[in-house]
Length: 173
Image (tube, rainbow, N blue to C red):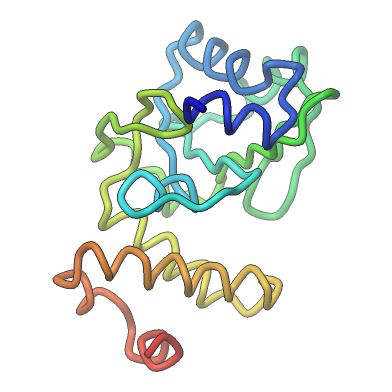
């Protein structure tokens, strides 16, 4: 089964949320990049996830969010905007923490979900995972997944180990 068909089946994306969202971003010329678990999947052996984490390359996200609201269901959280649609289990989180904004500039196209998408540089994906794993407000199960993602990245790029704080490395090995 083709990666895209597999992922569409797993997310039950009968509403074409992914295609519609990507078309929206491209039509409105919104630069973006993939981060999070799908960003890790672009560099390491992929694991299944219903999540797609994005960073938008715009400082004024409110205009983009207002336009998105016309086509999708939006739910705002402290550092993200979740985008969903009826008929899809896909969970798109747009990161609103300004620390992630520079990631878009360093992104390059890679294979994600059977599609060529801009993905944050591996160093940036790792940094995002370090921030997430260090966030005490994050659910413990999510922090465990972040640790696993950090380990996956270090397996393919051991030279990145010095970028990971010692307290996280001690929890990994």
